[in-house]
Amino acid sequence: MSLESDIKSLVKSVGLEVYDIMTVNENDELIYRINVTSANSIDGKRESVSLDQCVALTHLLSPLLDVTPPISGEYRLEVGSAGIERKLNSLEHFKKSIGDNISIVTIQKLKIRGTLVKVEGSKVFIQSEDATLEIEYSDISKAKTYFEW
Image 1 (cartoon, rainbow, N blue to C red):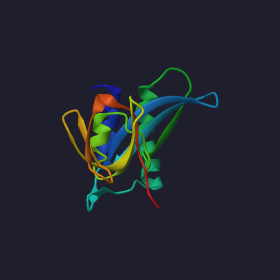
Image 2: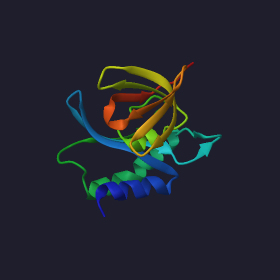
Image 3: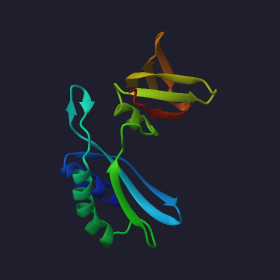
Image 4: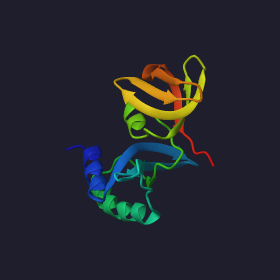
């Protein structure tokens, strides 16, 4: 098994799912960041992830990463919720965000906001104020969820 699949198994064992894993350099510090979401939904919306869940998961993951370091050199492990407003970097992210408000910028610089209705194959369907729009995933340059107060 790969390290990423081991991480996903541990995350799943506590009722969460890996949203993404990335290595970032912030303020001259290397950070191995694991963002998670809840595997459970209430009324079609994912449950939130608590700070206590993130702390418990950090304690579970640390021994694994001590034995199999994800990157060479010193780094800080950061486990957190993917959040209410998060980037959508893959079709899988879109699938996990059905029902959420999303904002898209296409490669043609068209800006679209609306509710993500469904994902079929490589097409993303967004309900805007006027109509349901069908967008090819490859035509999207940036996308994120957003929260309206």
